[in-house]
Image (cartoon, rainbow, N blue to C red; front, side, top):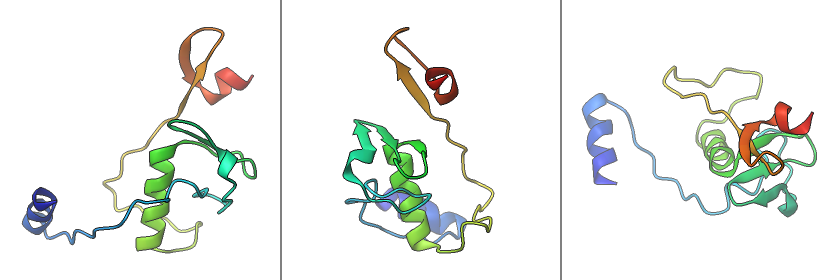
Amino acid sequence: MKSLDYKGEERGIEVLKENEWDTSSTCSRCGDDTKSNHVERGLYVCSSCELVANVDCNGAENMCQKITPSPHSEDRSNGCVAQTSTYMFNRESGAFHTREQVVS
């Protein structure tokens, strides 16, 4: 954590320490907390709003919303956030594909 503190201070950014425990079990889009949404290691599929996400990315989004709350319609980007993409494993082909390719 010292490295993050140092880099944040160097760039004038406040580093907030947040406990990650249980952040990935709730849907970051709709708030559904159905435990079966955590499909398998690394995959989160919301049974309510059909969000498909990496479990860690979903948890990170929940943490971001907790730290910088704002309505979902507002842009919370600071301009430095990478855009994630989600791929699902297709058991028939034995390869990863986008959700559209696997579901259709």
